[in-house]
Length: 405
Image (cartoon, rainbow, N blue to C red):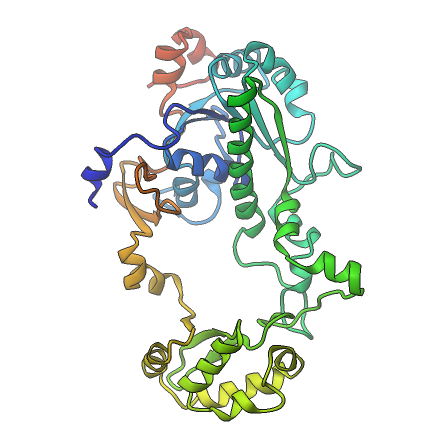
């Protein structure tokens, strides 16, 4: 489907939902990105001079932050200093007919500024407020600063990541922020669904570490029932074997996992080592876990004599599971990714041409999501929203340092 067909397609599933995004950086703005992807109108409120700090994170082209263009795609940008009476007035007016407010300031900040949920819900009783903080709105750590890296450590994620004899490893991307953004978007939809039934909004309180803590799987129940604390094992898992990465003869890497007995046997067939499937050390999953090092050594010996293309062909013939360990260039060009349209091309005047980014996640059959535009210029929609929609005085805005075009 080309871009013109998408632009003329059906309204997004969240068309008519209005989101006021007061947040900065990564986790909370990711949540509103997912909502924008499916048609919600997201109005991002940024400081008139500084804007979102994400504009200055990471790599830039022509002084334009590239990551900002992705995380704030499909949104409208207006500017206001929330610490001023005019900024407070702007937020109140924006929230009068909004469905959701997203914020990630430290606990108590919006209350000090006079725009917390207790104030805004008087103006709009149906308003839902999503609060994303490092450690949540309650508990002894509620006032601590927090961000994704701390969540990755605090949740237990970093402790189990890395080689057995090595240091704990933090992920090489914003896993804590990204996972929180997904959970935040889900919780927002849960609260909006309940609001549609009850007619009343509420507050969503989400701590950055909580999603990762839940994603860690059986660790809590294993510790509670067996006293087991999972340790670092490189790429292995404590509940299935084999599970690792292996190098081919031509220096490519593949990932292999034998999640079921039949899967493991097909791996052995593909590698022409049927004796491994009947070896007393490897004939069932529990034994393979106990002898994982020896199994990995045997699999690497077999794989090391096979070139990558031949290996993948063997696995396809045997209906065995394997995947290439891709870098980003490989992912983008992969025929499966191309067929699924997992990379979108978006026009952007600020970058003087099209920009590619990850596409909307998931396919809805009738109301698919789409990326309307890359992240906006700072204050790009001030006139449309603040003057034309809210009726604010242009001279007053300019006096406050808010550009109106």
